[in-house]
Length: 239
Image (tube, rainbow, N blue to C red; front, side, top):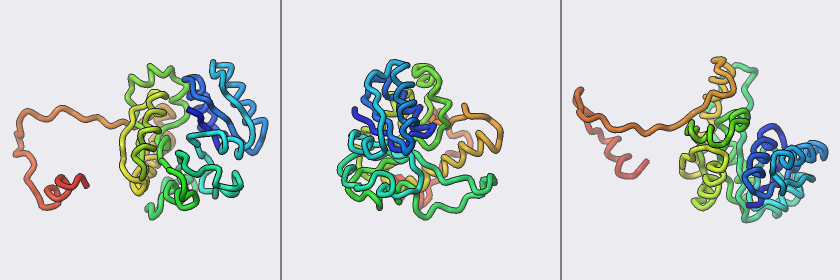
């Protein structure tokens, strides 16, 4: 897979290096040319022989999949003509900033991912990779895979969700299909939860979120679930 990193910050550098080591062709883009060059050299030093570096626009033109880590900035300001991204999968890994360090977040009326989709109507925006710290990817892939850390994935395009799920597995994560892009409104607050656990609760960058599906209880010793109209309606529709 050809992956363009638009905005080589910490997460873009580390995920790009990890994908390059896994055998993907990765092009690191940045405003500062040396930042992109340093990331590509780091990837090559670790076995990612196909890593390249250049501008954000070059990264956008190169990738079949774009990792867009520039938070809440119109792609037109970052890469110029956005038609370079038409038809491509664009991953949004971003979270809203922590307001004054107080973890006092406003309700999400429109997610960052939905906003990005309005800027890029001809692309397939996918929300993912906003619920873990970069430090997780310093772990060996098999060690991380054994922990079954969840990667929550939302998009209006099922094939794009599948593409990003495969890229998540390459990193050692366990994909969780979160349905349409509107559900980024519940995925982005999960990023707030993990940042609170990491920073506010002091658990550190190796704190993570994962979904476990447990074995059903053998008996309903306390009477089990009493059916309600809401439960029946939403169970029937999958809502």
